Image 1 (spheres, rainbow, N blue to C red):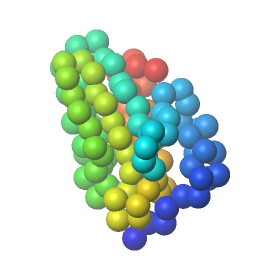
Image 2 (cartoon, rainbow, N blue to C red):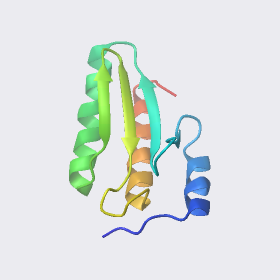
Image 3 (tube, one colour):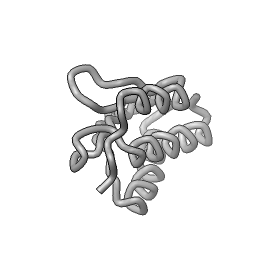
Length: 102
C-alpha cells in the first residue's frame, strides 16, 4: 500500500503541479478542472489518462460535462494523497499540454 504524504510533502508536490492543481476543501485530496475546446478533445484526454491510470492500477475520481473534466485524486486505501496521486496528476498535466491545454 502507498504511504500517505505528510502535509508538508503534499504542499511541496502541489507546487510542482501548478498551475491548476489545488487541495480539495474538506478532504485530503487534490483536484483540477481541465477545459478543452470540445467534447471530443475532453474525451480523448480521459481515454489517454485512463490508460495511464489502468497501467498504474490507480484510478481517478472524475466527472465530464461536454468540454470540461473535473478530476479529484486521493488514494482511498491510504486515506489521502500519495505519490501515486502526484504521478497521475503529472501524467494528466502532460497529456493536457499535448492537447494544447495549459
